[in-house]
Length: 98
Image (tube, rainbow, N blue to C red; front, side, top):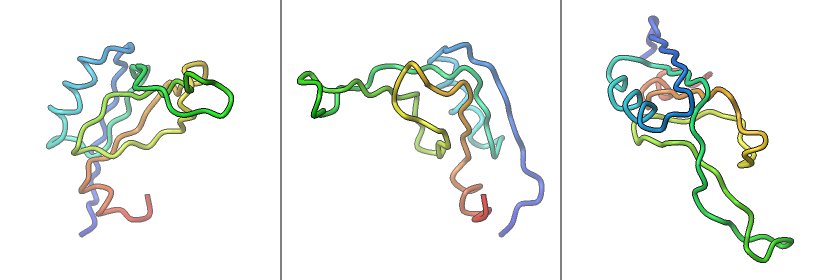
């Protein structure tokens, strides 16, 4: 099934994790695509490293099971993206060319 009327929602969350979580939950049945400006990033864990005995820091943004995340991410806070794109699961399946 191809959906012809995509609903896109865009919001600047100003790095606010709670607002991001609320948007992801409340818009899951309303929007097909969400653009989140200034998404929050937080240290998730340290990953093994050949050069750093303590491991390299790995940063992540809030996640939601109903949304797929599309972002250029090198897991470094110096270069974290200022916009993240999320597609609801059914949108990804309906638009295989995305």
